[in-house]
Length: 397
Image (tube, rainbow, N blue to C red; front, side):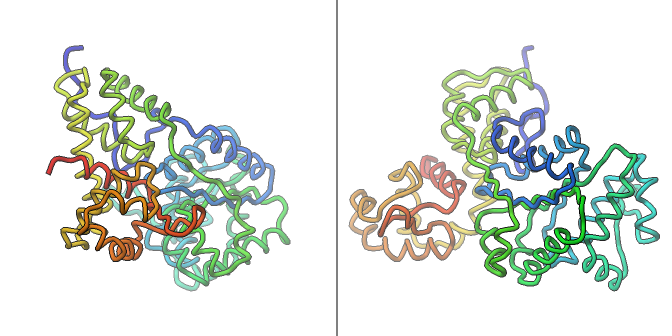
């Protein structure tokens, strides 16, 4: 092969393709253990947490596929952006169920449950939309346990024993005190009234979102099985790059692979951005260190515009603050630092602005206090923030 392919193997901004899924063995094992319990008839409610860009959605989607393949649980990945209450969630779940079922034999079993409340939308009518009357949706939400039980009964004979429902992008729900109460009541009702109830509800969000949801009703904390997505290891990041480029018929110089691995910071979202930029810069099937250097700098711009610049640089106009945003990440390679130690590497002018800067960055949720390490300690709230600022710091001005 003398030229590179036309299509990049990387998918920035999208979940990781299953063929490039790496690592996460402990989390997958835990998820499948709970899936087994759900398939046996016990309601499970998990909460998958992790930093932004760490691959929560990719892991949840992968788990849903495995649960369907290995434990006969019909997998539904439900995106809840914009849904602010239990009714919104219920409608999205049933809408997704209709879309997954249509085109499969199981639609003959469960289609009747939707009655005439399904309409086809989209290009060529290939998508279904569940649109019940307001009073019907209210009734479904109030008796959601009955609705799910009806679905499970209809699944009998289709090769599915229950449901694996991923509930993603739940910020709106977490902000709703009424949803927290609804969720507790739903779980309590199932515990008292249904056996078996083969359903796994897997909420996906940051730890901040989980805490916000729990703050509305402390009893909700006991409902969740906690599951955390951690950073890739360095070896897993390297393995991801090797596999992705091999899939495209390309190879990477060791120096280039090391550079990409270092600056990806073990975050899938950054790994994809850097890898995609590297693919574009490579002139042939060999990826060089020079390609990787250009890709790292390019990725800093892309990540900033996609995720962080509107929150940080567009709201921080002071040249001195911008200087601190470049200085601190280089001086705090772990993403954690002590104010007094950082002060030693700053100029006199920067030190004079440091306390105000720290307050502003806490308000913008870029930094937070690090109480585990004691007074005067801070950490970046997200590795994505830290690595973006580090990448920006090394970018030529």
